[in-house]
Image 1: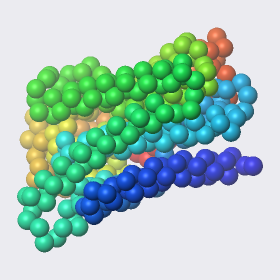
Image 2: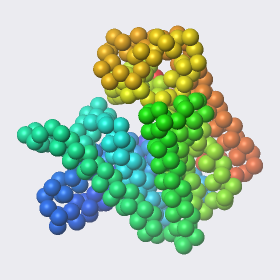
Image 3: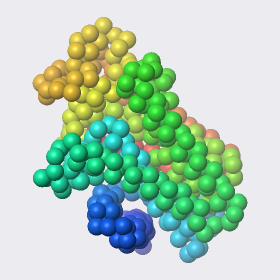
Image 4: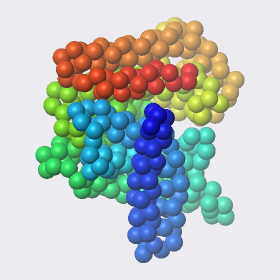
Length: 360
């Protein structure tokens, strides 16, 4: 079977596992009225059909770390854990959209926006409150479902304990990162570069990269030393990914990446780009546009040009390169010492290449 066919088969299996979960939740919701059933139906529409970056990485690496092909039972357990990781991701997105006040994601209405649009005759303020409350409550349910899914996975008691400890740490760090991110946006803490980078590491790198890498190691029965190496690699790759996300939001082509152009500037989001710009003589010309909800396309373009001129774009692109190179160095060391097998190295390099090759 070709690599492409194998990837398609893996994606199909993960998607099927997610569909089974949403079908079960939707069926259970029927008891509580059509409104609750509708919520789960809309949730499934938004949660399914994505790229499945995290679950694919987890299953691929679990196989690569294992000295033998995964048995049917072990493969199914990996799929189960991968599906729960994707549910966790969707739960975090729902809460994030409420915190940020967003109605759009992936070029279309998010769950909140879809719920609002589905009640055209309802008063604006009440239906928005209802839709946001629905997203919070659904996120809570999915978070609980992910935890229970980890607890029920068919693995040894020791592996289950390791998985649950990992999940607990992941949730703690992600919430801490989100808490700091809100504090940065609201001016409650100083937006220095060190704080911004540590916030990104906790908010994004921990659950998007460290969690699937380490969960794969647990499922493959890898050592604590392997987990430690994967933690370091995941943090570097996750930071590179988030920094690229910040670059895309300001300098990228919205037709390519699907983001709302200048959304970070309108929001007043404290990123490494802004942290660097604050230290330059160009900041006065940028600050007048920063955090303006009514920022026009023309003013956004002016702010973007000044961010380029002051060197902020080049600086952050340099940070991306540094973290990708750091991940590569740790990977080479882990291979040299035998902590990571060659197959795992190939899987991680493919991930790093994917991060490095994101559309600018």
